[in-house]
Length: 199
Image 1: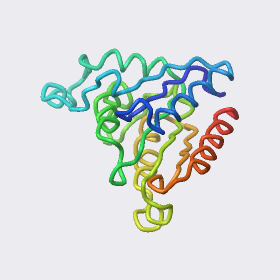
Image 2 (image 1 turned 135 degrees about the horizontal axis):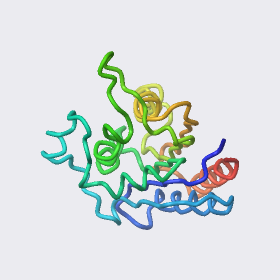
Image 3 (image 1 turned 90 degrees about the vertical axis):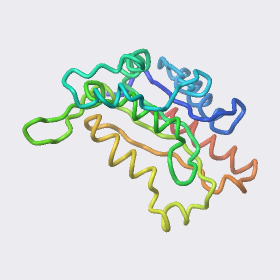
């Protein structure tokens, strides 16, 4: 069954950035399909990505409660579809997006530890769709052949399966953004529109 309520998380400091344009397009396309959408612009909402000393000290304790980010936790729990939109910097997530995962995808929210076997048990069982819209400054061959596409590996193999079961994961990437023409950028946005219209 397809998701009905999406949380779209944007990580870019500039409101007129390509990432922001992509996030707005995602929101508009999903809404046109009849879904409800919550846009979380991490910079606009002044999200602090730093895991606090108190959070880290209590992280492994039973019944951990992420009080300082409880509003974001509720917004995540309300969704059954998740979309992350960001540029890749140094072949990685922007610090603010990494901090969002560090502080919100926590025990009791996104997963729990199986005390008997030490495994991670997914708790985000309502999340059915986990899509990523991203850009890289480097060409395709550098990202995939030289670097091994680390962001996709982190999110697809690390975050998604440990937090959600049988999730529909997809990553849409535009490469070589530092030299991308307007036509290439528009072509990618058209691809994004078609992809999200198909959900």
